[in-house]
Amino acid sequence: MPVHTRRSDDGETLIIAIQGRFDFSTHQAFRDAYEKNGSGVRRWVVDMSDTTYLDSSALGMLLLLRDHAGGDDADIVIENCNSDVRRILTISNFEQLFSIR
Image (tube, rainbow, N blue to C red; front, side, top):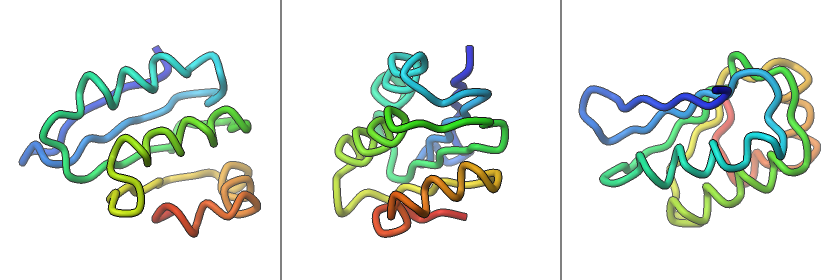
């Protein structure tokens, strides 16, 4: 499965790791990751260290996560992006909506 989740030791952070292509084919797995594993979570981390590709549907999925996590008050970090993924996030102005490291 290209989407894996784990919680921090204190249980307040949910880390969602995306492997390979982050596109429409991962929609259900990504949604399940935060809906089924997100109770009691205060902080969300999307780990893209193994993400090789990102398309517009993935951008939409990140926006859905943001809405689910509280909109403007959501604490979401996108981390470990390769240069291509980072460029897409920058062009899309996602730095205005998410913390990208």
